[in-house]
Image 1 (tube, one colour):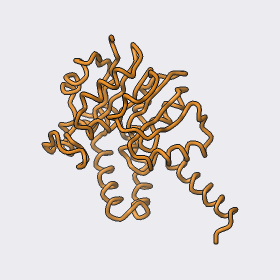
Image 2: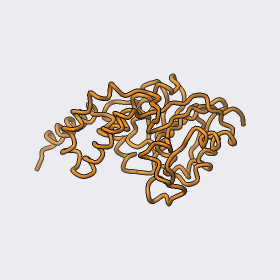
Image 3: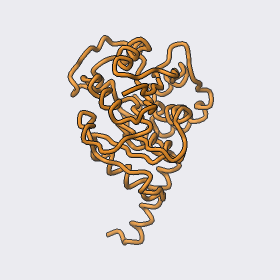
Length: 253
């Protein structure tokens, strides 16, 4: 049996490795972690991160001084995020996580100054309902940070329309026009846009994703280390981005 001391050491090593590699091996996640927080509001404000996953954007907002609630329908991810951030010493009063489906957002108490929704809405069939929930949860002048696959990117453009939620993406994604049709009738005004995912990084990210899916993280890890320096060549607003971000303000009640 492993002694308590050895268990503690193994846990410490595991946490240290996770912290060194944070937010993980997925390069799509890493470029969103690099670029999206540039658009977030800083200071002691209230932020809701919907579809928070491993909590990487929640943590980015926390580092900007926000009080952050991260929610996700995957309880395993929520438990893992809470455990990890507690271990690295974040303030629980300013960074917490709850299991919650986006269709249950009406159950969330309180109001927020900004809401983050990254690579999540494309999995939701009734996206208009969720956008309405976002609007209701925001204070006047609050900001919605919405990032989804760009529907016209060749990897995303597969003709998916209103597919079952059990099959991953229910739609290919969004364009600036479809974002406007979704957001403006509710009362949002788009203030800023950005394209994420340059051709070089998308090509590398897809190869790494295939390796991880076929052989696992351990086998893919050396390839990840080789790719790591290439991230400095990524940039915002390539001609055909992989993901499209919009910053939208709640204009009125």
